[in-house]
Image (cartoon, rainbow, N blue to C red; front, side):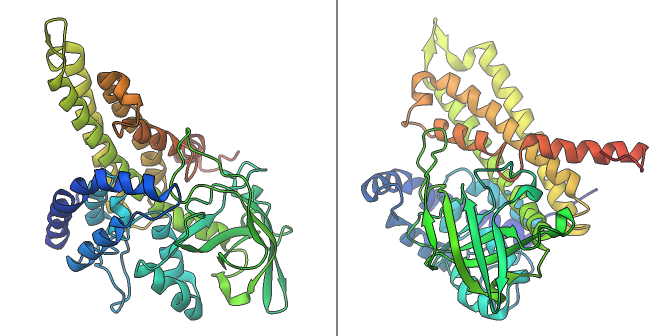
Length: 407
């Protein structure tokens, strides 16, 4: 299916590239130094300068299509946003500088479409303005959360309130002092049909009964805001904090994860591009056995394979973005699952080649490659493991031949 970028999207892409060159890349060293100074969950002051510069240039909330006319941000299609998100993926903190970082992006989309007017005013507006951050509570330590019907946290109605009891973990960013609100998925009716048992609800972080337990690291990395266990013990919130209606949580999770998955893939294309650039840079700098590393046939093969892999996956992502814009997320479900499997695996191959060329430095903190690898590997689990997405694709393919096929 043919697609074409709009002139507005291309103009904003040029602005983002310029912003990256003028502000983001020059700030990498200072950001890292400030992060070390303020600690794992601290807030590097340079982020305020970067955010102010982004807002001044109109580069704010670019991720969110179809906003109301009075909301901040520029309204882009998924297709137009894809190359912009790719650029932002090249530096870990750049998405936050433009208020386009996960999990806030998915949470803002949920609030925009499904929250009550009161909740929108209380939480969506501050998130759109970048005044607060948010977290998303779906994964649980005691069950296989890739099957959402396993979710165990209970959401029970008591008069004008819902009461939450249970545990979540990998609620990314929840330890960040700027994180003020959670969106939590739990069961409101365990006796309902399997995909009608779950609901989503908005829970302010300072609600009584919320505490923190385990603080898992990711391949040894302590990410800003962490991925903590969040414990809910008789946590009470107003009834109108519910997103949508009771039993709509599974459908809402799919609505949220569709754009979230493609955003991850867009950014990961950028990660792979930067890794390839670092590979070539190092290959040109080093000599072994009488010639530069770049002159070795094997390295040239790696460079060529990486270019082919990146370009093929980029086209797959752009095709999927176009489908989401034209026929909707549900109709593009197979393609969304496909890129979610293909892109992280591709990026891992490219990053691994770059690490190999950098040698000892590639696995150290002195290049971004080790962190890139850890987070790309995590994406093979986050927002649904490869196996679940492959199952989705396989079932759709089988049903083309046998519409009655069931498992």
